Every structure is written in C-alpha cells, then in structure tokens.
View 1 (spheres, one colour):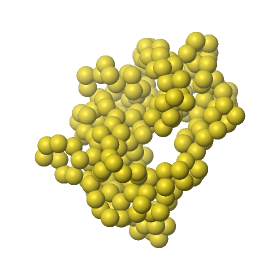
View 2: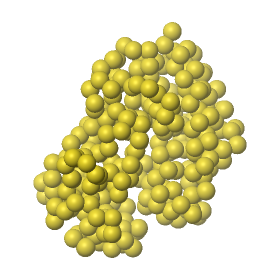
View 3: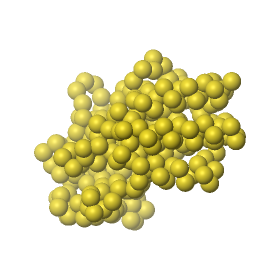
Length: 257
C-alpha cells in the first residue's frame, strides 16, 4: 500500500512493511515483502520493484541504465496488479509528492492538481478537482488562461529567475557538471524551459505551470536522495519553493475572482 498521510511522501523503505494492521505489500517476481538490506530496481512501466539478484541487475549496472522494463511488462503481463492513483491514473511512485483528497481518499500528484509540497504543509484540508471542480482553489488552477493571466505568469517567472536560490534551476543541467544526472532524472525541467512554454503560450491552465515548477523541485529532491553529496541545490529548491507558495496563492486568488 502507498502512504496514506495527506501531506507526506515516503521512500520505498519507509512505505513498505509498516507496523500495525496494514497488509504487507509484496514485490518482485519472488513476491516477498520489502527488505531494506536488498538492492532493488524499479520497472519504468509498472512501477513494481525487483530484487537486483532476481532480475540479474547489479547496483553498478543500474546506474548506467536509462530504463528498466520487467519481463512481465515485456510480455504484456505485469508481475502483480497495481492500484492506480491521481487524475493521470498511474501506479504509486515513491519519488513523487502526493496529496490525499479528504472527500474521496484518492491520492493525487501535487503537480497534477496544482499543489506545491511546501504549500500542502499548511493546508488543513484538501478537496480534489473530481470532488469540487468549481471550488475557488480548483477553479483557479483549471480555468483557461487569458492574456492578463500570461502577463502575471511572466512576472512570477522573472521573480523566480532573479531569486538568489534559483541559480541551479535557470537552465538545463549540464552533463559536464553532473554526468549521471539524466540517468537518474527521466523528465528534466528548468526555468528556461518554462519561459519558452510561456512565450509560446503552451500552458492552457495554471495547474500546468505549477506542474512544471513542481517538477523542477521534485527532480532536485529525487537526485538528492540518489547522491546527497552531488546535489548542493537541495536547500535552494526548498528556499525557492517556500518563496513561490505565497506568490501562487495570491495569483490563484486573483484568478478565481
């Protein structure tokens, strides 16, 4: 089972085999509970986890792989049925931030519903777009952007680009500086890319803009877990996200009126 806490995201080791009456989730082709002494590799298709020993992949080998697809997915039969979550109906992925709806109890990627991780920490209650599509929060996130809205996005982006903590996120990560970055991060995003999408008016809704900004932070947090010493920008991501939260809230307020 994925975590049920509304405002928390757990790693694989934290979310498996928890104490209490929860059913223990089984993984790999050997169908065993999670064991933090073992090395695991995740399938990029079904998001199931497999012992490296069971699928013939060492930890060193995994660091040079751009994708791993389990035999079950290759043959059209996944190792085990996976529960689907969010508007995008994807299996749980412990590298992503989720928020629970207090009405339907479904879990949603923050980026899919326009909720920043830092923003969720101060939310007493959250209602998803499925349960309350016309609520002020969801309406502002999903209304079609107009010319005035794009001007506000440009202003906000400039504030992010000039913030002292945005230095690592202004342009794509250079492989000369971080050689293995794109082996770990499969969906890169940066402020330069966001700027291009604003100029080309590729954002239809505010939630899409928030989703891309969220992806920048999530990629940073994910790489930090992989290589803490190689990611000094983790603190900057936290700082920039905290700076962004009140700006986004103010923007939503103006768009919902």
